[in-house]
View: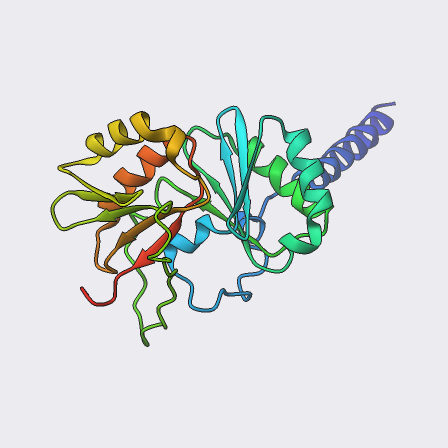
Length: 236
């Protein structure tokens, strides 16, 4: 009887050990967050992430494909959009953006949507650290790609980040502000006159991101998530 009990204990321990090994799951976050790192964007610049992205926000989602923005309040709505635009999304790497307010579970859920639609050319970016990280060493300077403004179109809403202050050109009127608060008040007052598809942010290539971020936050406050960036090469 004792011998039988001894063998039962050995068998139970052996089975328990096997179950533990099978039950353990390890997630390779590097592969999960950038499954195709070899698919690099040509002439990539940090601000390009806003041209093709899914931004996970607290309570809603914003997806931008080829600089065209759509907002969805539920994951189901976002899922339906992705299903009907798979071919378009698959043409370029898409960036999944999140910050500290977003849970890991939410990120994985969005990545599952992409995987279920056979979209694996994406990269997950933590916006709390992306722009604060030191830039990689540049062996060869990339070709600068920028948007051009139709100077004859007075309906363009052009925000220029100056060395000191901000200037706005709109409807043949030029207005200067000391800081982003002035820009905020101007947009509040003239919002009905602003065409959301004709917003430009101009600066030199050497403008610090901290200056650009102040303007971006003002635009974000007024629900302008998509705008074109114009780099003034003459002042570099």
